[in-house]
Image 1: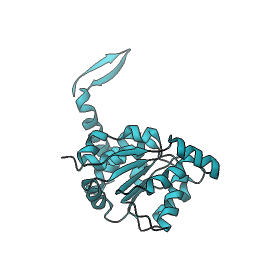
Image 2: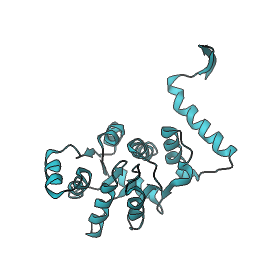
Image 3: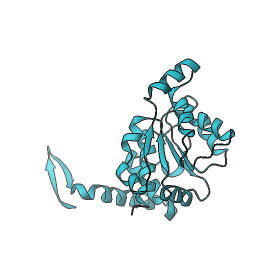
Image 4: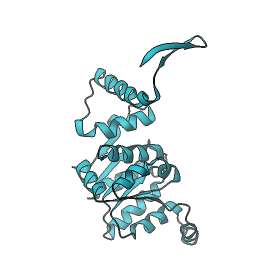
Length: 218
């Protein structure tokens, strides 16, 4: 950080672009410790990145992690797992260059014409049908759901049929069916990172994916 500057009578810290993220993480760490909140060391990369993305400290209390989920996510990524999102926004936010280094690819089928056609014929959301399409892929899969609770419900139904994803990141945002859809995934034996309650979003889903990848970056 360099000396400050004043614009329009308001003082700003002058920070190099390359230092913004590092300084933000330092501020997050300082404020959490001032509140007496200590995040487990292994969870810091995920929790801090979500707070950094949202500027919302509530996530330190609402993010839920299944047992040994980070180790399982690490293994999946190193084995070339593909990432499936429910929105183009989450897809756009994932660092695909880093993902490619692990041998994985990112996918979003929400705009697929066949998905749209089938969803209309069956009276379902495109998000739900896109999860079915993804579940049929013959590769290890990590799902990052930031918008559609119907995507999580669809994944639950596929799990009941025997489908086993490597990880489900379930952070849809909203009011209708959001909370119960998250609880549904938490009732399975599939590894998960879930944000309890109404908060979440595609940006949060992408942030969690990136946090997992960055901690494994080669």
